[in-house]
Image (tube, rainbow, N blue to C red; front, top):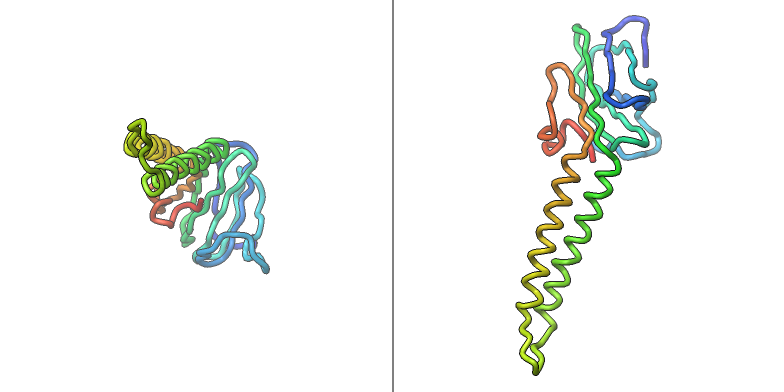
Length: 172
């Protein structure tokens, strides 16, 4: 993967010892598969020479969430910067999303199955707070999840978390 001739691609990160993998072409599904199209090129900071073409670059570490980007290599040197998101914050966001969803489902369950009791407690006194709490907690979890993603920025490529949402700049 590192020919003696080619275009230099320099990859560095804001966190130490981030492992970098490269696959030739556009790889839409970057989950582990067999045969694995990705080749480990090393840990950041690293410079590798690649032949002109399109590559999928993935970065990962125990301390950061996994991120990837599509990189077009031409005749000019390319610089890639890995901005590591927190894997702990991503886990917290996932947990909050699950708690929020459970709150909303509990509210739906109350609305569907609960009948008012003789003491006059109405369903809305239970379901509305559950809907509100579930929505707030779930929304907070989604915001934390999206904010903690790892981004790979490169010359001429997508920048920031918006590229993650488009599905081009990073994977979740």
